[in-house]
Image 1 (tube, helix red, strand yellow):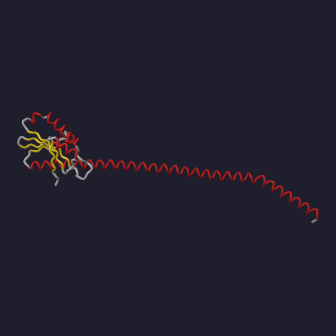
Image 2 (cartoon, rainbow, N blue to C red; image 1 turned 90 degrees about the horizontal axis):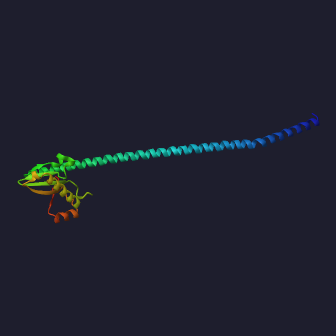
Image 3 (cartoon, rainbow, N blue to C red; image 1 turned 90 degrees about the vertical axis):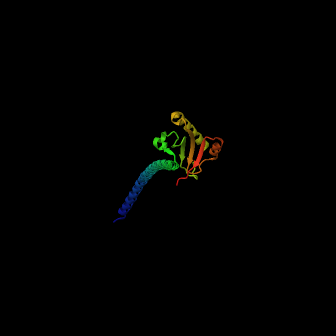
Length: 210
């Protein structure tokens, strides 16, 4: 191979390399830009997926929270209902117990509260002996409980019994009428006790339930 041929091959190779370099210089930025777009799109897609996952997680947590609140409310409602039913049962049991006590003491007893329910006009028992009618309100509350009988409750009882007597004057004619507030323990507060001392209208009697 002659020197001229070698020179031509060399020049041709150099030119080819230069052309390739130009092509690379032109296309590399485009490739990098495209790759960057791909990376940005991938990152954006990942962020979108993450945001969607976070949104779905928040929705799920909200649903869980709402379900817990619903269950709590239902349980509270059921507990309240159960407490109310237990209180009604305890009240009825105590009324029966007190009525049995008065029967043993020789009284004729009418279970007015059990017969009339919510329409008992504040009178649980009506007991009679000789020419005396006694109107009785019964409370079966614990002495260490949060509920106490105050003077307002005593006044309410007086008002209810007065209204009852006004509507039943013919039946009470010729009888002495007494009002008795019977409790299973000492649940009267100071205002109720002071009212009873100052007003000789209602008698308070404690009959513990055995």
